[in-house]
Amino acid sequence: MSHLLAKLDSRSATVVVCGAGYVGLPMAVELATSGFSVRALDTDSHRIRALNQGERYVADVPEQSFDQAISSGRLKGTTDPGVLSLADAVVICVPTPLSAGREPDIRHIVAVIDEVVRYQHRDMLVALESTTYPGTTEGVIAPRLGARFELGVDAFLAYSPQRVDPGNTTFRPRNTPKIVAGVTPACLDAALRLYRGAIDTLVPVSSPTTAEVVKLFENVFRAVNIGLVNELAMVSGQLGIDPFEVVRAAATKPYGFMPFYPGPGVGGHCIAVDPLYLSWRLAELGQRARFVELAESINRAMPDHVLERALAALVASGKSARGSKVLVYGVTYKRDVADTRESPAFAVIQGLLRHGADVSYMDPLIGELTVEGVALERANAASSFEGYDLVVVLTDHAALDRPRLLAEARAVLDTRDALAGLPGARSHVYGL
Image (cartoon, rainbow, N blue to C red):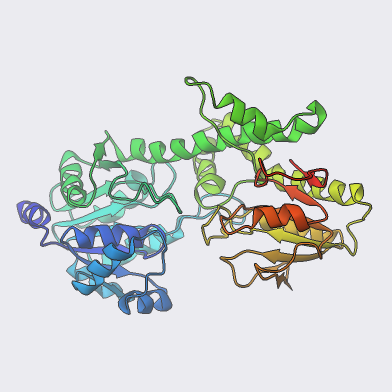
């Protein structure tokens, strides 16, 4: 172990980061710029080719740091799992989606661990960063890694959940406090030494299961609060109120309140997926995560609510859905982020198509879009909004020309409060 610790302390260790996507590439860059020799291992040959050619394909990675990591030679990409034989430390950042039955799917984690075991050697640290259900590290990974070498003596295993907020230019991996847990005290010590050079603040916790729950709880907190304001949005019409105005006003309270805003639904990996990892695990233990289940049902119902509001806006404009020209603005799950994973826009578009609408989309970050086998026409950002019977704003990208939208559109369904505060007539603007 002393040999491994010395290499981690001196940053002469070779680190293999498995998964070079939204989570893995930022971490690989931080480790490389802190002095480690880093190899990014990924099955996507196009991604690895781009990395080795110095193409920054994840926008959240600062350009200067990326260029420094590549030009120094400390960061290189590979598709060859044999590189694991050279690893002193392995950091796993692979996707953990939901199955078709909306249950945890950790096949990518298991596949990587099987490769690690194939090349495992004495004094190797493995740190899992992928979000997963409580008990994965100790119940699934530890038995595999501990089969040949004793954990905490000859092999080391830790869990340190990723905290990545796409589009956030203030908090990057380096200045975001990082949770770290080891299956033994020696494992924790090794993991802390790995991350110490790349992350400003480390937060050790007592066990990997605790760390797994911390990650899930962070996103459950958001999902539950989003569910609360989405429910407010659903009843706002009957109450005759604007839910965004309510939240903005409540946010002036200087204590005891944190603002969350309604929208067309939740998307991305974290909010749309992670809470179900916790509720699934509790169900395995014979328990129910009632708040998670309630928030999930409300948030999943929001696209249908948006569809109903869109149909009502058309009727109010003297139109029916069938044959109407509808423009959907913004199809990514989050503002100014080129990621459509779990985006609620798909469900809204599907509903409009089923009702016979002629749907186009406008999104500066998405070049092509196919929904239910239909390739949607992409409207140019400079196109006039007046040619559509309804414009539905699902994602309020900064590039949206808000004054022009308000002036040109015949009818607007604004699910993001994108037009708030603009001067001009608003009788044609509909909210949640």
